[in-house]
Image 1 (cartoon, rainbow, N blue to C red):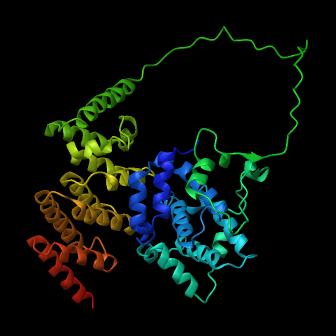
Image 2 (image 1 turned 30 degrees about the vertical axis):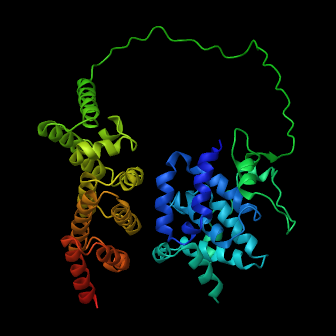
Length: 419
């Protein structure tokens, strides 16, 4: 269970690249989710934890802040108490109590902010800005709420063994750090997954001897049984099979309106059908592009499920299109989503417009994004203050387009009304 050299290169690029360390945390999260699949998150977390535990592998404070943020970001949709790396955060806090170092203080300062309820503003800061802010901070952050989380969750494997990787204490030691990291954490059997453990004696248990007084199981043969037929079983199965067939077609092309209505009505009657019709987050982009109304119905009935985050992450990271924006617009009007996810999607829309090479396609998406943002602002779906600078820069960059100029005026009007 380790990363390939290619996957490791992508992670290191996000954590150590100068351009990445100067970007805000939202942009770092967007780049991470674009390149790394959710199924690889735990393996990536193990690599990042190894780098953070050995300071000679990840020395710069800004790089360590970026790595800590990714450990938190991968499981941000869930409670911090179930984050598998919560014990590691706790160990950093414990180490800080007996060690005095600026970069360590920056790490503890960052952890205390990122896990607090008012952490929204920190996502707009870059790792370098966070390090500077921590160095200028005169008050010690309150970490009592973190010390009660994860402190007793160290696994038995970690508690019974020690790492086989030792830091290089020579200050003038030289070498290719990237090559060293690759040898330590990638490959079929990397050293980072090994540990030095005490030998545990496991004697072979003795064979069980038959006893004369042992209970003998006897199957009853005198009872009579009658079977009752449940007609609803066939009916339910028939509906599920029919919807499963229609969903398979819906992933390949647009369904006629009667079939779309049939799927939406049956899902509304029994929302649990969503889990039995063969739909997964990986197939969801195809459903959005071919039958966006069905996709919206699925998301609405997943609003109370823990799977909504997976589907929403797929929706945010899929290629920008008219259909995906329509689904997002309708969803935001009917379901309350965390502000950080909305801001992440808006950032993706703006980046897509700026990076588009075809001018005609670029202008088309700029108009769509402007209409989308205008709708969000008019319906008070988003707080203008949270994205004012970013959207204003977008409007100025495309000011020659009529819709962008209109969005700019709307921003100014709302900003004036808010004082």
